[in-house]
Every structure is written in C-alpha cells, then in structure tokens.
Length: 263
Length: 316
Image (cartoon, rainbow over all chains, first blue to last red):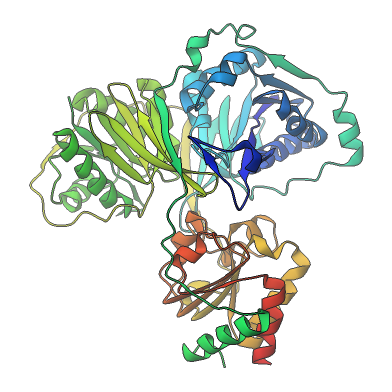
C-alpha cells in the first residue's frame, strides 16, 4: 500500500521576540519539522520496513525554504515528496483548515494513497483539525489522536488506540482508506543517518502550483482573519527567589521544610 | 437565525466537565447574539444526562439516543442533522480529543469556517475568537466570517454552568448510519505500574529542560534526598525515559500534592491541566516568561543544572 504523510514546516518563536502587526517578526522565528509530523513520518517508514507499505510519500504546503525540512523527512526514509506552493499562497494571510484541506485533497486525489498520516496538530497555529477535515472531504475514514497503530493487511483495517484525556485509551478499528492524526509518543522517531541525508539529496521533491493541482486562487479565500496578535499578559504572582544557585536553592529548601514535605 | 448549538460530551457513563463549561460559553454567546442556547446530547443515558445538563441559561436540550459511547461517525451525523434543524449561528463543541475527532468533519461537511481551541469568544455584529499560537507564547484574535461558524473551546477556560434550568428536553430523531467505517472496541487504562503519583504528597516533576536521559540521574538523586515522588511532563514519557504512569497532564494523571516542584517544565496548558490543583507549585526554569510561572507560588529563574545540585546538598 501507499502511505502519504502530511509534513509541515513550523516556525518556533525565540524566548524574546517582537510582534509586527499580526505576525511575529521574522527575525525571531526558527523553522523546523513539526514535532507531531516527525512521529507520523516515523510511523509511515516503519510500515514500509515492516512490509505493509510499498511507498511513503510526503506532502508539504510551504515555500522553497521548507525543502530543507522536507529533506529531513526524506533522509529518515520517505521515498519522495510533493511540495505545494504558489505566489497566491505567499500573499495569503492565515491558511485556515478549509484552505489546507482543499490543497491537500488535490494531492491525495492525484497520489491515491491507502493511508494518510498527519500530525495531531502543528506547533505554530495548532488548529489540530486538518487531518479529520481532509478525511471528511475525501470520504475517507479517520481517527484523531492516535498513539498506537496496528495495520491488519488481511482485513485492510487499522487497529488504533486513541489517546483520550486522563490516562484512558480508546481502542478503535478503522477501515482503510483512512486519515490518522498521529500523537507524539507512538514511536521513537529516528535521527537521520548520514547515509540517509546523502540519499535524500537525490530524492524527488515535486513542486506543485495551484495550476498544477487544477485549482484557482479562490481556494485560498478564508473566512478567518487574524485581527491582532499580542503577548499574553503574565498573571504571575509567584515569589521569585533571588540570588545565585546556592542562595535560591537554600530558600527553596526552606519552603520545602516549612510545608512539611522534606526534612 | 442567531441561536447557539453546543454539543456536550460524556465518557463511560459520566458527563465530562467541559459539558458544563460549554454551556457557560454558549450562554455568553447566545446573550450577545440575542438567541437561544440549544444543547446536544448524543448517546449513552441521554435522559439522565439531559437532567444534569438542565442548568440555568439552557433553552433547549436535544437528545439523540444512539450508542453508548462516543463514535465519531454517529456524532458527526447527529450534529449535522441537528444543525440543519436548529440552524444556529454558532456551533460550539469541546476542544477535547473527541471534539477534534468529529468537529472538523462537521465543519467541512457543512462548509462552516472553523476556529479551534478558543480561549475566549466575543460577539459584536460578528464572531471573534481568541486563540493561542506558538506554544502559548502569543495570543491572536480572529474574526470568523460567514453566516454560520464552528468553534471548539478549550476546557477549563469557562466556569461550569450552575443552577437549575427549565430547558425544553426533547428526543431528536435522526437517521443515523451506525455502520459507517469505524468501530470502538473498548477502552484501556494506561499506566498502572509501581507508583500512583496521584497519591503523592511531594512531587518532583521534570520536563524537557533535562535535555538528556542521563541527566535524569541528577533528578533521581534529588528525589532520593528529599523522599519525593518522581513525575514528568509529556516529552519525557514520549522519549521513553520514564513510564507512562509517571506522566502528569491532560492525557496523564491528575495530581494534587502539597508541593509540586516543576523542574525544567515550561507549563504547556496540557501539563497544567494535570497539576494546577497542587497546594504549592514551585517552578525552576531558565525562561522568566515560561507560562509555568503564571501559576507558580514560588519560582527560581535559573539553570536546573546549577540549582538542583545545590538543593540536593541542602538535604544531604
């Protein structure tokens, strides 16, 4: 079977930063592979190594810069990549769930995978909704917040655990084709080996414009409009211990003794 | 058309707290839109659930008696059918694991703009949602256009609704295909193991700041010197450095010790959900802006690799 993994390059914000209008100033952003997608890539590569998957393809919505991140997924074992970008996307504001759903739908229809894996959420905008929305749009089955996956080839069913709140997991059988959103902890993502990194250089990253996907600019019209961005006000009324490590540890020890939890 | 439809949530026979929070958020919104607040209760003992949910400010409760437990196919179909019936301006659902398993599908099917994980809502001729980005480092306000919208709300951001209401409770007959492609086969408790951290009086909890697995030895020394119980935030368990029964947070254990010493933990909302009930929260973190300091009673802004050895010395 073919597994498609949605991979996002996310921005991480430095400890100190400035906001320009409705965006964090570019100088304070660092880009990396979305943590949840890293687990999704690993799960797909393991499906290939274990037998059920023949091919692992990644798809990214992102500018040319994001190829560095995509190469990381290729170095970990994905076979090839598709990158969706367009000048129209460059100028768009927030890419909302609907927009991402429609862009990814076109790629899924072209690639025709049996299974789509996606991170539960992205570390930057954290909508946590694109995978399930995409499944609905495609008429695929789905499972959100999956932290264990056992694919049964005979029945073409994914036996999954969904991680609920409070230390409870739900056991669910999901018919393929399906979209599963992958939670961290489902596996241990590998580091890219030097050999993998070298091989990734020769793997294909196919750029796709809206035109290539048979879409027009209307697809990126959004009903969501970011009107302000600000740092949340600190509500801290903590008593902060001052001094060097020895002094602060001394004050902390005093509090622990005072509260009667340590002697 | 300015009503609000809010979907409640239950698991294993009990309504979840967010069901009462979504009433408060829904009422607040319905007051602003000048409409009614409708609740949806899908599956389980709908009659008993509806009685409990009949709190002040609820105008109508629609029960859909299909299945015992959550199933996203059933929920999606039921909510879509109810949406057609009630025709609300705003659809509210919990931003829970299960909320995220059906709300995006409903929004897509009904072509509703979707804003997830709202921490605040405002309505003035249109809906504005407040959300966090970049791991809670920034907040954004987002205007959500369209005639009708879908919003998932974060748990514990609104108080639970109280009082006794006089809502109209009625069974909603929906034509639901219960064989749609996913089947819930059971539940499993995770953890167990050697220690029950929810019983502990003094918890030393470690997060990403520990950097390497080998560095955990330092924390174990502290735990031994102070006779504490060792716990952690999610990344430590994800890395396989500690077993799942040591994880504090939304998807782990909820703890209520006398003292919770959070070392190298930034204080993501999912973690805080599991430990905010501690009597005293003490945080050690290099980043003075880390959200953990917002809920801490005491804090050290400093390097754990300098502070912890000094602290161990205090108890040896």
